[in-house]
Image (tube, rainbow, N blue to C red):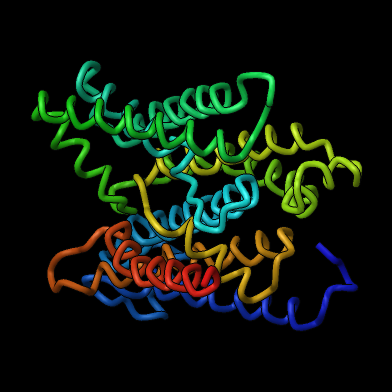
Length: 336
């Protein structure tokens, strides 16, 4: 980022956003089917005595809050990278086939290997996302022309369509796969424990490091390949690093919590509206805004239907649809 020379408004806005994220995390610990007093939450975090309220906090709400932080952070940064990599403001991480690869691998594991543990889903989902990312990148960069954002996007769309069709076919042929897959596909933070968090954290951490390194060159890449090379940027290396980061971030988050839509699409736009076109600041803000959206959606889902819960993925879809319509209308007005 711009370090101490950045405009004070950016730094103050980032700190304010961090405070909002802390408030969302606290709300996630307090609110649910049963509201736990803040004093009990504090006591459970420091001196868990095994009481029902403490069990609710430490056994259920802390893991889903931490997972919401990880998943939101990963999906938000992945969205920034995807839009910067393809130079398409309406690009979503799912365009590279990462979500479809994770879903297909998990469906295969349930249908043919009898996998029913959500913890195992993470490994199969991540493996599927990684393999599909490599295939899409290889197809999108084949030929004399080398890497091209349009070809990369088209390859991702084509592979996604094929894998989605195969996944739906397996589900129709295997009722057990449908039942298991439906729970994962809703995009929920429930039912995941500390083991899932421990398995996902290293991959997301490495993906974040790769994203931060790639962000230094994305501003130049956004100006076009020729100008980026003239500025001394290694375009191919930046794209490879971005794809690796995308696979680690989006693949791990999707495998852990299922496909949570619109986070990677909407959050970078909000960040860009707040701080301008600098990819480094867009990523910095998205690292906070995306977890706010995911955790906030999870909290809303807990209280939306009394006595039941709505998965966070469905809530983000309802919240994100108006954003998508607004972006489409804005693009149409800009083109007129």
